[in-house]
Image 1 (tube, rainbow, N blue to C red):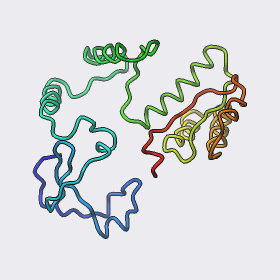
Image 2 (image 1 turned 180 degrees about the vertical axis):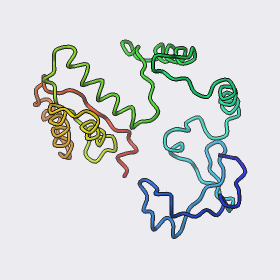
Image 3 (image 1 turned 90 degrees about the vertical axis):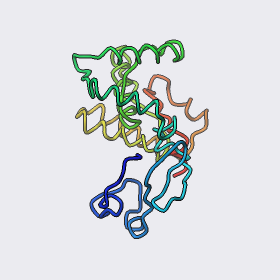
Length: 209
């Protein structure tokens, strides 16, 4: 984040980058470009500080420019920048999993690593589907999520990844339930316990969009 920028990076052409969740025409007509970051603040190209109230996108919770993090990342990159987890492994991945299992609530002692919140939701829904089928409860076909939540859309992606008639019905039901703005506790309990497969909860910040 604090590397020296080339002239082309300081005044970039803006057309090629299609920015997510951004009104692109308005932004590119009056761009707000960041230059560096330290601690809990960004700095703009003209030297103004901007409070990073959402920790990057919920991924820089320890703050920007932490020397100990930079040193740890540099050491690991110099040793091995990537180790596959398909049929292979690296001791540090197992060490981290064990450390997480020790601080997690009782019963949550199996760690599946992902790269992002989106991938985590995709994985969790697939695990829920596989879990209930394995325990003989394949009739659990309802997924409950909040209307317009970012992660609700991942159920729809499941239908592309797994072309299965039953899964398509799951996705349809998930979409239908999510379109209802509010359900009382009694309303949710009215759904048979046998039918609910998973409940997906969205981070608080998503509700501000």
